[in-house]
Length: 454
Image (cartoon, rainbow, N blue to C red; front, side, top):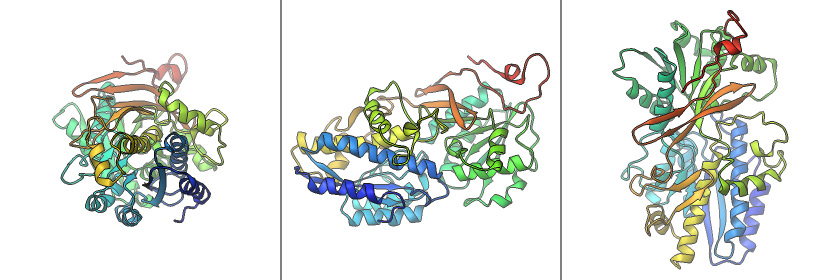
């Protein structure tokens, strides 16, 4: 098990598992992108997810050790279907009863045939592509994050509220990008007041071959470039736009959750110049993607994490200063709740049902047999699963998305959407246009271009 940064902590966890006296040792698998192991996921994001897994296991483990002990097995799923399939097979060989992850939609597509054949439930915290809701094709798949159809609705609401009439929709040619782009296109089809130009970016991306995608753009104050892409694709696109002088007014960019995961923290003059050029750009991502300050169940995890050093537990909650870190990208609370859901299910099977944990019993539990077997107030809100689709049940908590402005190197949350089944309830606060607006008229560009939307 070759983690570049995990060996010591995994050894500790395994020693804890083997030394505790409990009714049962339960093997739980994890499919995660390793730090430095997949360019589609920024290193800092992969690091934070690893920290979140450690925090969740170290907080929840002692609570349940008299009933059961969780023995973790971790494999690198990257954001690649083939890699994830091989990693899932290795977990099956270790006799895990359930799996947390994968994070990426392409990895879910690869892991699914293996875990489906083995009858092993798996819970993703960040794979948002539509199409996973089939109880025939994905019968053992569940997720604590809402699907791209909801995010597409939030993105289109931005387009409508700002009256953009020309939309250049860049999307990466992989499962996440194509799924989100389809959702956006479906919502905009038939709207004759808006011109939609879909732009497919081949994946894996070639950063040297992107100029042609910007060649025919004719920007105006009513046009926007939407990035429905993985983080590394968004990075390549923004760097190309900057080199071509297409980050200045009136160009305006709107990033989906994958795009706002692009890491603007780092060294070097080129990155500093790009960061300055992108000031004021906007994005949509998970509401309170790293933390829910008003959600009391998360406080326990947050307080534990805050006692750790940033070197040992990288992530937002161990930074000593005002966080130079995106608020929008992490899905940390969803990751913690994916792990929490397994602990809740284990406890129900072991204590309430008086049985040993097996994959079939675990699958029944996630499907609501017995009733509300997995239903709890978690770090990301109240959580239960739809028994037939594996989706997060909207009757327990409705989809919420944050609307973000890039300020310094941080995506600052300015507002949120609460999406019901049929409607959108936007509550937009002050939004600032990109920093390259002309300084004409009264006041500064900042006051001139600030918008108040209600």
